[in-house]
Length: 435
Figure 1 (cartoon, rainbow, N blue to C red):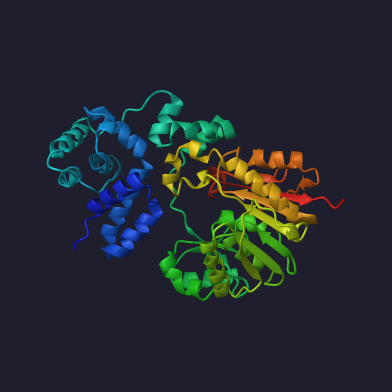
Figure 2 (figure 1 turned 135 degrees about the vertical axis):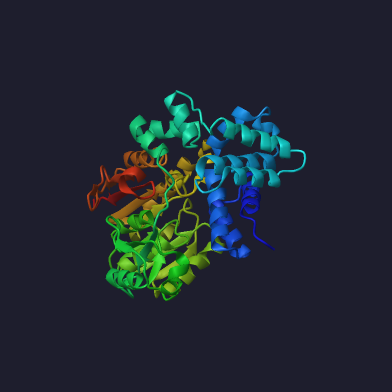
């Protein structure tokens, strides 16, 4: 069957809107099954992800020209219009006639005229996009960031930083690779990548991380032989400030898929003990298989609810990492799906996060280290959690760290994408007092 990138994008958009499919998984699934020419696969990806990224702005444009409200439109028609407007307004190489005709072809018989009329009206108006004069209404629409999320960023970081966060363009980030120094050096991996025609450089803030323009398919051999694994700078930094050494006893309380545990074990030169826990038994194989591939044998994977107390672990561990479940608002620039989830769906997270941190703190030895981290930008899930913990646990103190030019304050640091070039995330380090 011939692959039609516009039709495929429409089907994916309908699936995304109606069943909540994750966009990155949907893209990978469609492309792997289609075996489409590279240009068609690229167009499909551009249209599908582009419409999601700019959904609020596209809907704002449609409302201007439609005699019917968006709620009155069926899912297919709504997404056909989004696809058409997106091609007309935000692509340079697609001709107007092609964007219009192909969109009309996707429509049902009874909606072809409706779709055609709206797209041609937009063209006749010179494809002008009129935005509100109010600052935050304009930002919300222009950058497709829901107003409630804009307000959350303002309340967490103030108007200036919130504006920078909301207006940050989608990131086409380079692939981040953690070097397995049990098998290779960073210089070895860079040399191999460059030999194969790829760009590669060391991260400026995350130890043993290489950033490259290679794709995962380009480096499958290096991944399979265990010399590297994919790990974002944020994940590496969380494991790096744990500051584990060989012979330590370490707990990774929310470990799956295992990258932080792997990094910690490598830092320990594969000597000591790492307990890697996850709530779901079915996910533990990701840890055991990954550790085997990397040549790590000090990791024990265990099914364990981070909120449930394990008495025999009290004051057992030299280091404990709590990379807790979070709203993920620090990666909306890579995964735009996240920004459309209502904030109410995250309302119970802070209590869960605090319970995990408070429970796992019991396992830290006197003089030991406790690290808390999230991949979100929300002070209620970040600074407020740590502040509450330290105020209620006087046997712990903030324990500052430095990473290049980055210096923590009161043991914590928020990585803002527009300043650090990383995902948005938060890390805090604490030490249990000796007395």
